[in-house]
Amino acid sequence: MAVSRPVLKIVHDVVSLRRCMQGLRSSNQMIAFVPTMGALHAGHMALVERAKALADKVVVSIFVNPTQFGPDEDLAAYPHQGSRDRALLAAADVDLLYMPDALAMYPEHFQTEVRVSDVSQGLCGAHRAGHFDGVATVVTKLLLQVLPDMALFGEKDFQQLTVIKRLVADLDIPVGIIGVPTVREDDGLALSSRNAYLTEDERVVAPSLHRELIAVAIDIANGSDIKERCARAVDDLLGAGFTAVDYVEAREAITLSPLAGHGPEARVLASALIGAARLIDNVPVP
Ligand code: PAF
Image 1 (cartoon, rainbow, N blue to C red):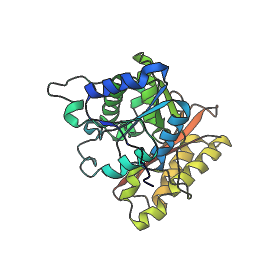
Image 2 (image 1 turned 135 degrees about the horizontal axis):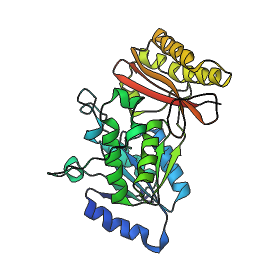
Image 3 (image 1 turned 120 degrees about the horizontal axis):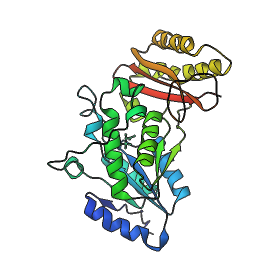
Image 4 (image 1 turned 60 degrees about the vertical axis):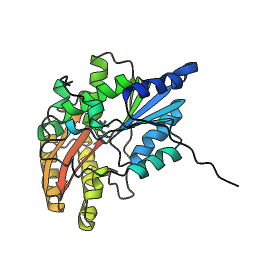
């Protein structure tokens, strides 16, 4: 007996997208949206699974957004795995895949930028000039193109999630933003498309980022001096084999403002380089 595989509907431009969205929205269906840059892994698929649990229809986008990569960053090398991504989304029974190309997103004469001021500053914003402007602009466009009821983003990119929550509130975009907990390997390494850049030796060192963040969070909860403890974590990570550490910082979880004391809702965040990979991670202060 022939087994029928789920067929994934794919659109490449906003006119076709809007036509499909009209169909999906009929009879008051709840729509969840998962924006991605492809190279899908279990972290993305956890977003899709959560979206399926929360909504009637799930739309995914794949667009490697050039404006969020700096001139020295890895746009050209960013992993592409088109047919594998499509197979994963078809197997997950996603209702629609939106895959615009750069010209469809940024046509000739495009000149509008969305910039979220405070929460884009510091942390990754201090090391990746213009990155969050690129993210804010493309996410605003994607949300307005798809107009879902909700959109889901991973907590691994905690600053990105905060920037997106801020812009949606500030611009009155009628979409609920949902953060989904980080998916990790058994040894604690946060899943990321950039883990593909790690050599075997670097892969052994990489989980110490998560271990260190947990240790910092516990020490802060137990009353350690925040500045001193974060500075020690930088030394520990360099000692463990990281090439460079952009930052280890404790921030208020909602506003991302520097942590004044040991109040609730705090997060420890870090970015560190190992070989060709910039790894980011964060954990809550218990
Ligand atoms: O997290 C990502 O994959 C990207 O930054 C996003 C949100 C899809 C915008 O390009």
